[in-house]
Length: 65
Image (cartoon, rainbow, N blue to C red; front, side, top):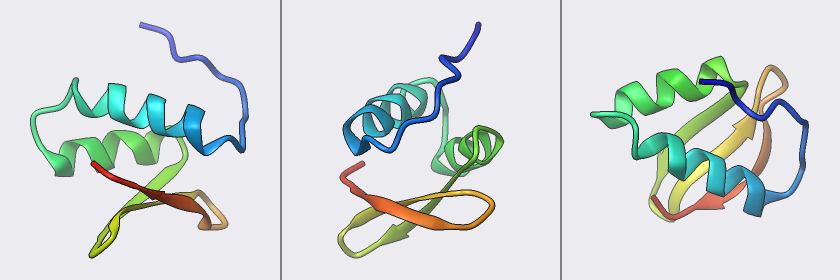
């Protein structure tokens, strides 16, 4: 399987990608691990899941997952 390797700042596109990858994993820990490989850091907060781009940890936004 190949990932669509284009850089985007659109939270909608990133959210769609993250949620599609979440459906492929068995646990949230596995999902976070896989997303680090794609350059995203996920952190659970009271408001949802905070998404940041690595390595700078630039926060893109929060998604409901």
